[in-house]
Amino acid sequence: MDLESWIEQALQLRSEKGTLRNLSISENKIDFVSNDYLGLAQSEKLYQLIEEKYKQLQLHRNGSTGSRLLAGNSALADEIESYLAKKIFKSEKTLLFNSGYTANLAVLSCIPQKGDVIFYDELVHACMHDGARLSKADRISFKHNDLIDLESKFDKHIGRKFIAVESIYSMDGDQCPLVELVALAKKYNASIILDEAHSTGSYGENGSGLACALGVASQIDIRIYTFGKAMGVHGACVAGSEVLTHYLINFARPFIYTTAPTPHSLISIQCAFEFLRQEISLQQKLKSNINYFLNQFEKLKWKKSPSNSAIQSILIKGNEEVKLLAAQLQDAGLDCRAIRSPTVKIGTERIRICLHTSNTNEDIDKLILRLHEYSISKSVIKELEP
Image (cartoon, rainbow, N blue to C red; front, side, top):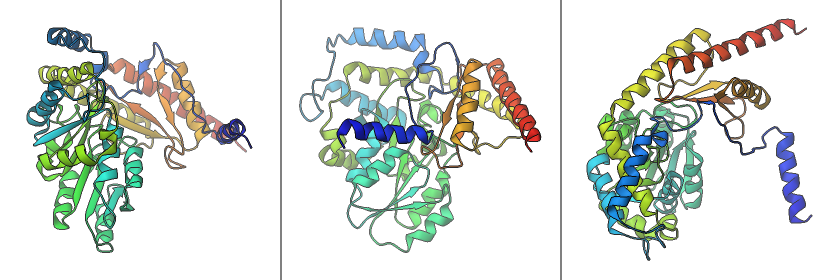
């Protein structure tokens, strides 16, 4: 079979299973899908701040021209890393990456070695799975947020122990029991690798994330922060010790062999955090919208993920059924998307609702009303079934 035929066959098989993906553009719909929790990606004030800062520095460069180890390093990159470490994440050092995906890939692929074990929560993001696969360490999953299950597996393995978790989980939106996990890791001399992608900006002083908010950041060896979600810009960093960042510079292939972030990207990161420091009330506005949604949703008596974050997943079993509901919400002007298997486990398909500072009570009421109408229609159909 030639390559083109093989590709077409693979796509056809996915289409028959109802799991074929396509790109789409949503315009003029109420946003319940993006990760722009604080509205910074759409902020005109932040846009102007970034542009003014860029002109002020007079860099006159469009790109970084190469990897950090060749032509791509700059005093600006060093300055931003120092700023993030000292002013935001309370760490000795930070090291910038182009995305949270590559930062997680870098950490998990090069630090755990043969003979080590990576214990990972079963719901961690795909980038953690991919990074772990590239390492030579053993990989053991544990039940989601179940520290008893995690501890039961420690004694069965020798070698260094790494625990890979997220602070806020991207699909369920629930919170890692970080305080208890830190105590457990200390008991067994294990190192925590924490992905703060969905808590960066939305939690903690100046947007420093959940670990800082809970006061346990200094007890977590490796923290990964993402700027393309609540911070509204792009890029990521790893926060930790000076020894850690020096090791990554020498051994992390996703750092060594990729082009460095552009000067504009670097300035955008600093401006986003400076802007949030002045507009930290956005965190409270987001929390207020989350509470309003939870109070209204409770009236529906539907099953959803146990989340108090901006991510609220409504479980709708079956790919076809969840696609149907998503289409109805889209037709009503609500930008909501279906999350289908195999992205999530079969039987846990869902509508993933993301809440934002920009959502009004009227927006949320409209969403709740459409969900209520869907519920009634399904009840009627069920009663008519023989």
